[in-house]
Length: 387
Image (cartoon, rainbow, N blue to C red; front, top):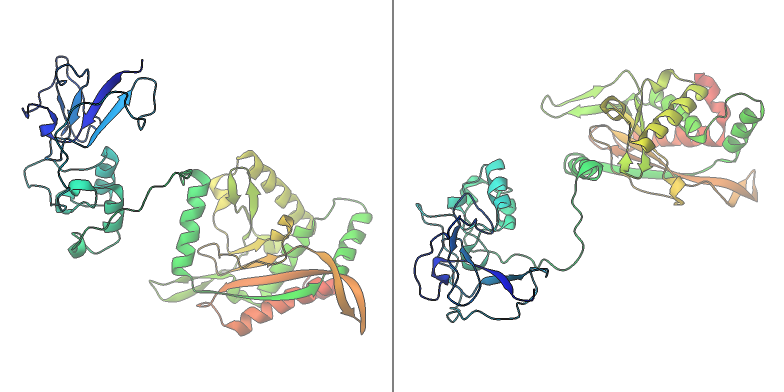
């Protein structure tokens, strides 16, 4: 306890006597274990340290001491004499027949997955060390630019908490990034007086039977609007340069869970009444909370309804759920001053927004869709034409 347990050095010249490293009895694996290129050097006499090198020509001053029971970054209580550190040389390309200087096996794995030959890479780390950032940067440029003209210093790591993008969060990140890359979206919005819609829902539920959810009524309005504006229930096939209009409405709805945001899909929403929609929303929401949704429950949507009003916000410009063409956003319904029948009154007001793929249609179509939805919210009797 309290004494150095081992010292990790980069370079065969880490031994005080400059002799080539040789593995101790029983064998010792290099700290990074990069494809067997690392070699273990015997301990310096009297130091009680094990020197482990990459087998490259990096200076011995770059050593890492680890104490038993201490953080790997904590300073050792004793120092091992080392030659004076030379000024870091400019990054060099790795020799054709020597080991490739990488910082970890993860870098090698990442390079293999992205088809990058590490022997063609000039690392931006100290002494030409190839970092993960080098591989990630090169995977985004053409092959002829794989060797940068001048290395770029890696960004400071900082001390902030790092949360891996995996699972549901990672899937959401990938899908939203793709939407932003591929879909030229635009958003329009309108305020609507939802007083009559809330009154109609209250009357339905007072009559007995299954309680009708507000989301089900909004979904019913959406399917009626999509019947009038089928352009928004479609997707773009860029390879064929065609807009594919879809005959069925598979309505997705955003649901926030402890595992992250998911978008379950109500199949054939255009054939369902308010009671059926209420029941299906309830079933899928419960499955989402339990983490029991199947791939079939989460794929195949043609239009998405996003009720972000449950978070207490009025408006939003949501990202379209790729490869769909549009998303209707619904804000919170709150009492606000409103001119009703020529007089100022307090009414239940909601903000509606439509984000749409501008390749599918222009503002006239999108505005017509949103205005029809707002009319149905303000006067639910308008829906009688489509029932």
